[in-house]
Image (tube, rainbow, N blue to C red; front, side, top):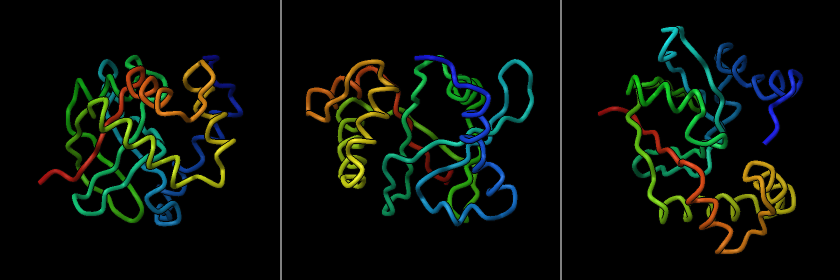
Length: 157
């Protein structure tokens, strides 16, 4: 996958300002802001992540680590386990866990169903992230679930 241009980085980072201006509620449960500490620098970092699945009953928010196991935000939370999550109008210290392949496949399916009217765009985005043609089949979902880490966040008890 090609690195993001400076323009795309700014565009994808724009929701950070909504959270900083206390307007995160505008994004609902569609995106979350992950506030984490750099594992080497010790500096506060902020990452916007798209939510694949929100489970209101737990509550739990599932995201895909699109850039794989080497993504800085993932390596940072592995090094310092309790990141802060801002989602909608909520803000909390989070516990997190990796999803197994079955859970990840189910999360991808739910995301596709939730976004069914935008299926061509979703498939194009998934293809770009995966680096291969994602066709929305069960086999493709399973392959994607096995290739990328999926992380679930929930408020610390």
